[in-house]
Length: 124
Image 1 (cartoon, rainbow, N blue to C red):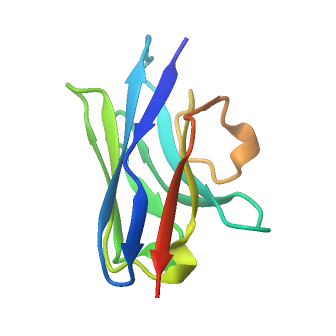
Image 2 (image 1 turned 180 degrees about the vertical axis):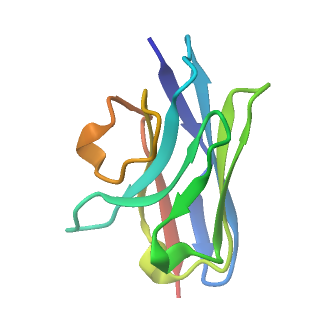
Image 3 (image 1 turned 45 degrees about the vertical axis):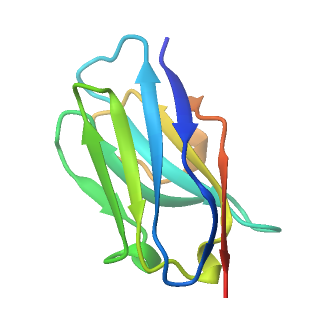
């Protein structure tokens, strides 16, 4: 069984950067997807970015393209979300999520493993 443990987050000013980490433990099979979701106050949980563990590609929501970068360190079994040029609209609780899937899926309901969540607050 895969478990996900998150670190990072915090309070920053607009224009600053943050990096979130999601470390995996347990057995991974060949096809595995790690995604980042976020949930702002009074909002639905939304897809932010995702990567496949076997290097099949990455996807981003339009509003973070060019500002956020998802990457992974297979040896450390860690996925990172580098967030640059942060804006107040990025304020949310961020979650990493995993699923045994050959391709990236965008709805949170299909992911069966979740990190504990971490708060990101961007002040204007």
